[in-house]
Image (tube, rainbow, N blue to C red):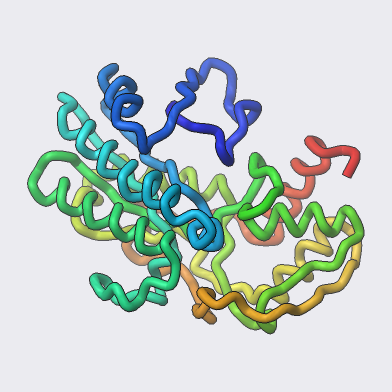
Amino acid sequence: MLDNLTSGHRQNLPPGVELVRGDVGDAKTVARVLKRGFDEIYHLAAFFANQNSCDHPVDDFRSNALGTVLMLEGAAKLRGLKTFLFASTSSLTGDLDEGLAEGFSTPYMASKFTGELYARYYRRVGAVPVRTVRYYNCYGPGEWPGRYRNVVVNWIEKVLKGEPLGITGDGRETRDFTYVDDIVSGTIAVARSKKTCGPRVYQLGTGKETTIKRLAELVQEACGRTVGVSLTPRRGWDKTMRRRADLTLARRDAGWKPKVSLEQGLWRTVAWYRAHFPSK
């Protein structure tokens, strides 16, 4: 496993997993790792979060665009590679008609779409057996709270501290919140299906919309505390009111469907959080 641990944590790795600490945007590091040879590659590395990309666009490009090209170029030199799974983002769904740069509202969207285009190129010329997925608001055990992190874990921390939940906008915006176990099973299903190695992009989510206001209610219920919410103006780049995964292709080509409801996922995530941050 190659990771620079800027947002991940070594404690999350199960026993026996070898960690190479390095940057996916560094050509020498990527070449050294891929020289070992692999039959499957899961390229999940990303400089995560739209706001993070606005604050640090060069770092975002290095990880999401350059890092993807380096991974694909290295994968093209491997023998016996069965699949290269590229993880993209739901931020490109709804805001963007493919190929229209006017749809980009953050560097993160631009860099991830660039990754998709390069993945499409390497697949088209027959160099790499690429599958592409877009994740929809993944959350669950293993994610630590912090700046730029997922709203779910940050809200759990706030509720358990007794702090109100801040909502940017009016709370009517919808997103598709997907439990991490479903993301993992969907990723593997798409990566290993014989029907998915093509130009299609597979959306991995629940197929259900949840308003941000309703999410705040559910997080408080899962935590067993009521702290209320406070509204602040919507961020300038956040223009999407509704977002929901279309599971048609994932079901048809990979035989996949999610299993964990949002309520179940939140309860599990709160339990994990309390076990790992007992003083909060």
